[in-house]
Each structure stands twice: as structure tokens, then as C-alpha cells.
Image 1: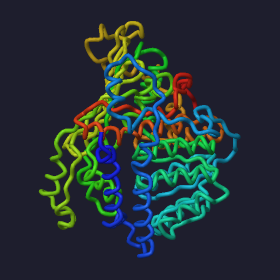
Image 2: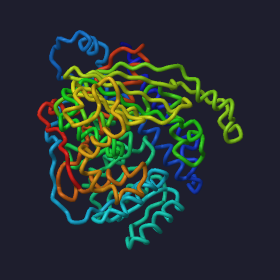
Image 3: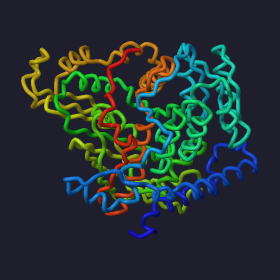
Image 4: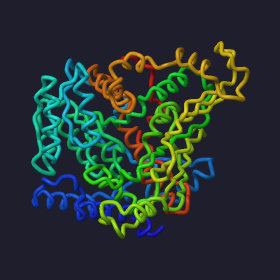
Length: 512
């Protein structure tokens, strides 16, 4: 395999980062000075050239021969993305990391756009949380967030003086956890520097974009013994928690297959000026793969104990043609033609299949272009039953076992039977927090997520998602793009736990 082919992903990301800089990446930040623009341009170019692709050559495989012929083919095709890197001397695993319990969890929040602006509402309504710092390069956003905090009797420090103002925030003494809600290309550095400053890093999705960045956050978490959790709110949706509880209680029997997705018509949003559409659309120009894997993948990984008794092994990915976004641009001519001439390569639908070490399968899809209703699919199958979402449906091998009216598994449970199962298996975390969460975003899951993860820090216990989950769920971006480019060849999935998945305990069913 040629060096040019090996670095194609890095070249595309380098191009993207340069474009994000030169095309006024943050068009919404109109208050930025020329000095700040130069700062971002220098940072992006340096990060792209120094970080992307260079780490591939340093990866070493710790995998012995395997009897699976497809897996052996994977190894021969993907030496640049081998299964693991050796744990450097002095680093320790963090899958069971505990810390000193604290009465009040102090949070600093970087990024106050659409996502960060919503997160702060939840943080200010968690009784044991204090927001001690906020940061955004738009002063109006900082002022608005400060007003909300002051209404709750809190007075966070504020940072808004340029692209690197967040570096002052992570050095602030009275912060336990840094929330990172910035654009993707900043996630890795912000997480790394937060952990190096002694803080835990809680990062929005996707946690990072490249395999090299995945290893950087893993190594930094292990080196500093600080948590790096992914803020995957969909793990805390009512249906997701319902399915997790049923899986833990054995309702599905032996698990065999899962399906998940992020299907969301975002065509108009991708052209909204002053929003994340400004930078998310850029990825459609340079990557053809699954650009947003974690919303669907996170929950099914938890159902199937991925990283905690089973592990992803390899994937195969393919994309449909790119058509919808180009048609939208041509037909709508958004923003008075300022996007004329843009070319997109990301297929409208990307489908990836994942094989696990225990032989189970996961299908994951990404489509933010097609005119269709929202869905994460959220499906789980086993020897005892099958669940599919959007709408929620459940079929059981032996309905009588649960005192239901259904006769067999040949039809979905009727509403009364499904409600009976909900009453029995609704997750206790959801039941205890549903009243507090009812005004929160995404049906309350945002509040449940922040409450639970920050409560883990308060108790000093390991959060539900560790840096290994953040890396594994996010690495699908690069790996899917690689498989698509290589004609849907299998691609090995790195083991970020370095073999520890065999002994890490599965998530339990917790209460608030």
C-alpha cells in the first residue's frame, strides 16, 4: 500500500482544516479581530500538519494469528490502522479509575453555541453543580450565559478574548470538570490540556475525528489519571435506558445483533449562518463515510457490553452516491448564492457493518441529507426478543413468561403489553429524574446525562463512559471513510483498552 494511499485521510483532513480557516470557519464570530483570525489559521495549519496521519506509522499490532479469514485479510489491508498501541511506561488504565469524592462539582464550559447554550441550562439546575467558568469567542453568548448563571446565584469567570481564551479557563483553580462543546477540530487539544491541568474532560460528540486523536486522549487520560467522558446524551434517552435494563435482566436472552443510525434531515441547517452548519458542512466536502456515529452507536455498545466483555473487531462500510446536498444547493441557492460552486463527496447514506470479537454484528447508518423522518433505529436482537425504535416496538419469544396477552413473537406487542413491560423495566435512573428533566433538551435525556456523569465525579466513582468509549465510538469516522475509499474492504478497529476489555465489568443498572 503506497504512502500516498495511507495518508489520503490525513491529506483530506489537512485540506479541511485549512479550508475551515481560510473560509472564515467561524462566520458567526463576527466580533473576532484580525489577530484572532490569524491565531486560528496558524493553529489549524500547525495541528493539521503535525498531527494528522503522522501517528499511523507508530502503531504496533499486539494481535496474534487468528482463525477468522476475514480478520486475517483485515490485518493485511490495514497495517496503518493496527489494532493497538502498547501502553507507554508510566501510564495506567482508567476503566476503573476512582477519585476523591467531593460535595460540590465545579464545572467550566467551553463553547456557548447551540449545544453549549443548552448544556448550561442543565448544569445550572443540578443541585450539586456550580458553574465556575464559561468561555466563547462571541461576547454576546458569554453575556447571555452569565445572565442565566447570575439568576441562579452563581458568578462564573468569563473568557471571550480570542481563540485561545479557553486556555485560561482550563488553568483556573476552582474547576473539577471541563465541558467541551466547541467545533470538532478543537476537541482533542481542549481535552488534552484540560486533563493535563488536572481537570476531568467531558466532551461533546464526536469526541475526536481521527485515530491519532483517539490515541492522544486515551494516552493523556491514562497518564494524568483524569476522566475523559463523551457527552453522548442518547445513552440516557428513556427508550435507550429501557432497552439497557431489559438487556441486563435477560429479556433478550443471548444478544446477537444490533442496528443503529443517525438519520436526520439537516439540509437546511447545514447552510444556517452563525451555527454549527458553518463548519459541519465542510466535512461533507472532504470525507465520504459516517460523519456522526455516536448517537446511535453509543447506546447499542452499552447494551452489548462493547469494551466490557466484547469488543469491536472490524468494519465494512459503503456509501450511496452524493446527490441530495448538491441538489439542495442548486435548488435553494441558500444565503444569496455565497455557497455557489461548493462540491460535496459524502454519500447521502453511509452503511457500515461491524463484527465483534464474540461474533455479534452491528449495523450503523448515517444520513443527514435524505427527506425522511428522524430515526436512530435503536434495535437489539437476541434469542429472547427484538426491540426496534421509531416507533418503539418489542417482540418476545415467550410473551406468556411476562404475563402478556400476546400469543407469539410473530407480531409486535400491542400498546397495553408494551406498557406492561415499561412499567416493569423502565430504568430507575429515568424514573427518579424524569420530573427534574422534563424541561431539558431532547426529551430530558440531556439533564439525565449531565446529572449522572457529574454525580459519578461527586461520588468519586468511574463514569458510565470512559475515554475508551469516547475513542472507540468516535473512531468510526475515520475507519468508515477508509473502508469506503478502499472499495468497502474490511478495516480493523483499534482496541483502545489494549486487551483490558476482556476483564472490564459491564455497566450495572444504577439509580440517581
